[in-house]
Amino acid sequence: MADPRTLEEARNEIDRIDHAILDLIAERLALVDCVRALKAEAGNGFGSPLRPAREAAILRRIIAEAGTDVPPELCFRIWRILISAATQRQAAVRVHAPERLVSSSEYRLMIREHFGPAELVRHEDEAQTLRAVKESEGDIAAVPLEGSWVKPFLDGQSGEARVMGSLPFLTTGGLPRILIWGQTPAEPSGDDETLVLATPASFSVRPKWSLDLDGKVLLCLPGFGHDEETAGSGISLQLVGRYPSAIEVKA
Image: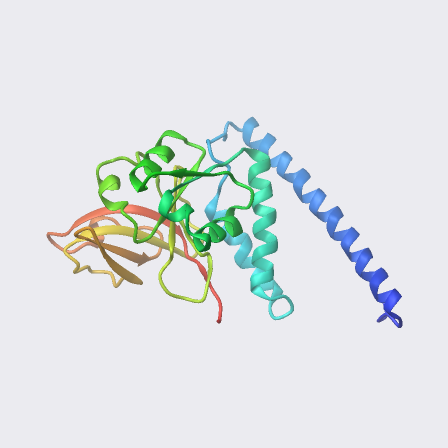
């Protein structure tokens, strides 16, 4: 339509757009119900409805399509809310976290912005948090990157759970603050990272970043993959996880 000539016309147009957005959201949520039914019909009812690769692809596409018309932060917040609502509509997902993370308002906000209304379950420490996600196939765990998770992980307390994501997902650069663990099978998203524990620090692939933790070297390698063949001679390598790379925006 032509540009509104009065304030009332402009407000009426905003109301019309709001109604259209509401109708589209309802249509999107209805399709989520279809997805849930199709998954059940196909026997693809894996415990967690979370699909990090699919979610990352959606967010990257939306932010790219928005260009300069809509700020990436706004795109991210809107679609993360939609994705979180769709996830919880398929199955209730809880986020387990150690007390040191839950007690931080900054970390709590980071989790809420990404996982929306998911219940946040607090535990005494990282070891208990990893055991909780081991025992709850459909849940996830949020652990500080520089927390005390290396030893319990190497002791097998996370079971089949591996790092499946990092926060913040929309970032201005630097190391991630939180690692997200879960039992969802890893899938490539087109722009991914592989997290490994290695000793010693020398490695044949140049890492995006590295961090000394509990006598081990945590390496973030570019790409979806990497195993013992990537390591040099005499290097012990332990896969921690594969996950989509964060979206980096200008500060």
